[in-house]
Amino acid sequence: MKDVDTTQVYPRDPRKTYGLMELVKGTRPTVGLDEDTVYAWPHLLVRELVIFLVVAACLLGAAFLIDAPLEEIANPNSPPNPAKAPWYFLGLQELVSYSAFVGGVLVPTVIVLGLMLVPYIDRKRVGIGVWFARERWLANGLFLTFLVVMVILIIIGMYFRGPNWGFVLPWEATTGH
Amino acid sequence: MQAPTPTPDKRTAVGMFFESVYRSIFRYGRLPRDGEGASYAVFNSLFLHIHPVKVAKHSLRFTYTFGLGVIATCLFVFLTFTGVWLMFYYFPSATEAYGRMLDLRSAVDFGFVLRNVHKWAAEAMVFFVVLHMARVFFTGAYKPPREFNWIIGIILLLLTLGLSFTGYLLPWDQLAFWAITVGTSIAGYAPVVGEPLRRFLLGSDSVGQEALIRFYVLHVVILPGLLSIFLAVHFWRIRKDGGLSHPADNDTPAIKE
Image (cartoon, rainbow over all chains, first blue to last red):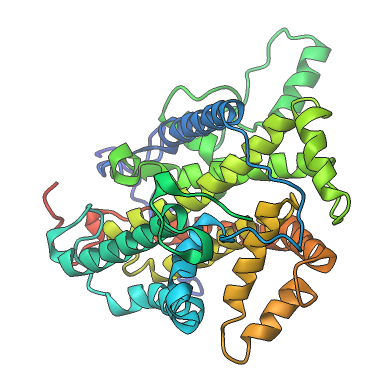
């Protein structure tokens, strides 16, 4: 950069903590030029647009192929057996069937508080920016176990629970009213 | 630095007028062709508030994020559009609501598509928000300085579940009625606060008209409003925390990729 003009065009104002450092000739921003970066337009915005369109296409495809469920009109006098919560709460409902306190209070509280505390407990700055970094085997292992257990509980609640929350095999399931 | 101004030429007055209107909206003319133009394109647009002018190549790699956060955001956008559209047909009344569902199937043009898109986008949003959280965890992206954005993320997950749960009741069919009866009874198991919380949600002892109007207001105003605010903070913090997580954020020399 031999043609950099180093004369002080704007003398530093002692009241300010910042100032104009120098004037550089050029046609574009030179900050971080040698970093491993690209322009947000088009590289990032085009990718986001593509994802947006793919999501739109998938939703429309699903909407034409599969109808959202609609049962008979709500009847407070005719409870289905079993009555099931939405799928994402079925893990909790499965736990509630063993203990109302564990499934309804203890586990949800521990999950939410535990998740919120994670970044304040696990503060060591290693393994960032890499999938399944070897240094993070314990944290990743614990979280993976948590996810797998939740998925298993949800699958049990969805497919293996019949009348009176008894165990049924999915291919033998009948929903009583 | 200044955006290049168009050189005066032989355009007509009408052409100049449209040019000035166009310039008032898109301050930097046409699609950018060089680095300077690309900078201005972001710098002079709404997207500056979401994206920096330049982003790390690492954060653009599809196999790093799988676009999960963007997908979840897109789903929220589609849910907002289809949700507002559905509001033209829906009536939050225990005697009316179910009939409106039947109307969407038969009487409203493409009503079934509208309802189906809303339903599947809602299920997908819960799914993709959880996947996004898993991605952030497995890449260690919650570590300093991004601790607080992880917490905002947990709040967004809870709001997503709340939106899905409150929406579940609105069709007022057997599935809706009993799922909400079971779901709110789980909330009722908490000691001391459980029963008052359940009654507060339902507005009554059991699921009925009071519950329907409460769930409706939560579903169409309060929860989407809160989610939008937290989403804005979530995006803003991504930029303030230096973009997506990156091996350069490690204290130790970057891990070989």
